[in-house]
Length: 405
Image 1 (cartoon, rainbow, N blue to C red):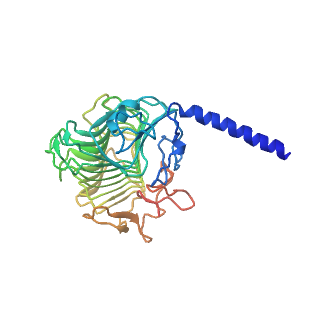
Image 2: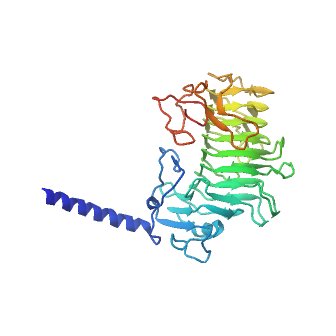
Image 3: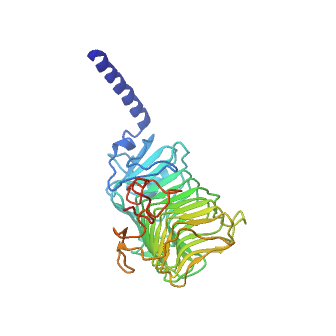
């Protein structure tokens, strides 16, 4: 009996080894063999539960500040730049692992994944791979993604150290479909650009190239755009998808802005503050439709200490819903809804956050033990974890805002 069990174990191990080698393809390291640090959860595949690992992929490339763009892009011989990796990462089932360090932005990614074999770009240490303006910038976008089924995870985009050339107006931009922008830190972009209708944003999910279903999850966005410039946004979304668990503050216009062809969106558990607008739900300047923003569900958000709170603008539909938000201390108005819509279960009091500040570099937006947001959210459309990977469930109660107590 013992011998049979041993043989079974060896046989199963051999099968697993063969499968692992086959999946690795030309690059011997699989995703599961690369340690990711600083992540408590990842949800890089839309609609799945969060986990601290990525799925193994067939093709794997590596980037390091000490690498070379004439190298093979393997773990032992990594590429040096993200632009070089973008030329290699063009097949479904690819992961690009980016080591901590500083990298020049202003590049474009065009590779397409599939529903069952996404393309993953991941900073191996959360916020360890920092994207900054190049010495001579020729592009207005730090990261321009046109591919479909792409996940961009854990990068820092820092536009503060402008050198020469074209100034960045966009941080992470995606024009493809079924993309995920998750766990990134985007800050100090478009601060010194002229305020014009050309616009800009820290994270942009766009329908211009007919992209659909873009998910923006668990990002920290701040210090975006010239103060009071109505054309520069924090998170700008113009198609379908979701905006969940993000912290957005000190934005020249709106922390979260829906426009163009935006429709069928879930906006849940975000914390937005210290901006001109908190959340704008609207449609206009259409690319492909004139239906307006409809079927937009705004739940469990903290919208605090902005000039305007939550507002519908442009054209909106009758199927939008607003539930269980804390909306308070927005000086001009807290709410502006249309079509006779009403918000429900709204909290109108101080959120009592641990370390809120309009001016601190990184305020602490977590709820204090006496915060009224604790347990006052609802489960509908909530992400399974908070921004730090802490589970949200019926046992602990669903909190309002990006952080679970």
